[in-house]
Amino acid sequence: MKTAIHPAYYDEAQVVCVCGNRFTTGSTSEKIQVELCYQCHPFYTGEQKFMDTRSTIKRFEDARAKAATFQATKKIKVEEKKKSESPKSLRDMLLGTN
Image 1 (cartoon, one colour):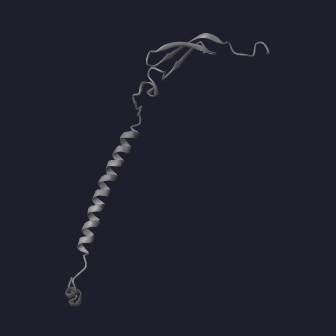
Image 2 (cartoon, rainbow, N blue to C red; image 1 turned 90 degrees about the vertical axis):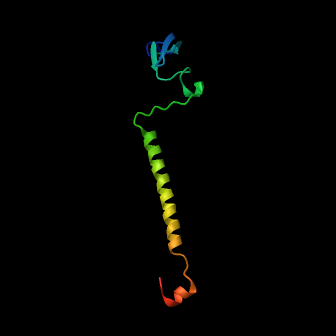
Image 3 (cartoon, helix red, strand yellow; image 1 turned 60 degrees about the horizontal axis):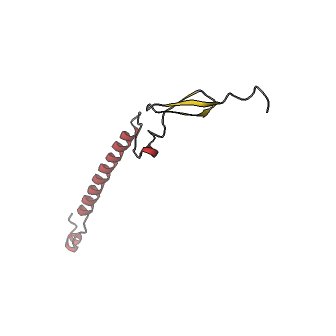
């Protein structure tokens, strides 16, 4: 190995999480700051967290609700149209009445 080209390795590097958890590990940095750790990560805790800062989930749910109401009204309109265009009786067709 060449000397003076490798970074310093710290056996007791401190890892600090946003949730307040601290633990030590080996690293080339003395102090590491992380946003998720084993105590607050949803995979390990079994809880589901959403970090929705731009409200994309709310906009998606609103669009989904709007689409559902549109489909319901469209179905009603199609059924009404079918009823109004019901086949005429033979007498009506021969007389030409509407």
